[in-house]
Length: 290
Ligand SMILES: NC(=O)c1ccc[n+]([C@@H]2O[C@H](COP(=O)([O-])OP(=O)(O)OC[C@H]3O[C@@H](n4cnc5c(N)ncnc54)[C@H](O)[C@@H]3O)[C@@H](O)[C@H]2O)c1
Image (tube, rainbow, N blue to C red):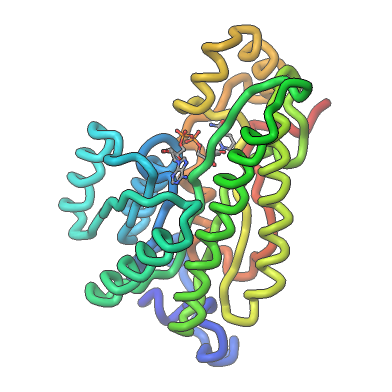
């Protein structure tokens, strides 16, 4: 069955549910025939999710403020793209620049149309973190965190939705939030980051409320602790932090980027077609116990 035949995100052009053939479960997790963009796709979680998109059958476009992606992983990603006859592209782009993001999205959409795999979704994964006690937090630093994590996520979602609504195709926007948007992490002094991720949760609900009419779904993915360059910096600065984190790890381990491949693919694919304005928390049980 072709993915288009089961596509419910395309809004008004979709026939009534009774005429739609029943989808097979693997199709519900497929990104075949779609181009997906990932901000923060130059390394860390974003880069791992780029592998997930290719493995699920899609084409992927990575965007990041880094001049070039992490070289070893990029080499492997290109190898996979070649083997699977799909594409993985990279663009340097600052998510806080409306002009840069708008231009990048237009290009990605055009390339997607040319290869017959339209732009149908994004993972807004770019983010920054900073650990400073609240009594010493400089307002300028606080604003910088909000600028990237909140305004950057908004610009990414807005520029994506502009294209999806114009092309009347619908699609899926996944905002990478955090469990820190819902709880305050014991032992961490990250008020700006936690506030920014809380804002992303509310942004998700607000955008979902506005854009459902265009067939655009908006959901958040809320990771718990993952070992990446971002958290390695926090752990290196204070070895006690890891002990505190492990105390709340119900599965006896912290996360790795691969733990987020399936949840992200699910949120992007048709399997989650009745899901919008929701949060998917993947935290190894951290928030389940006090
Ligand atoms: N690592 C964790 O434990 C954890 C937990 C919860 C949520 N998250 C979230 O997951 C996402 C990825 O985090 P990560 O751990 O892979 O961190 P990371 O620092 O390895 O990756 C973040 C990426 O965002 C990019 N970036 C930063 N500012 C940007 C900008 N202005 N424009 C474009 N790109 C920019 C960075 O260059 C980097 O490649 C972030 O949103 C983070 O808040 C991480």
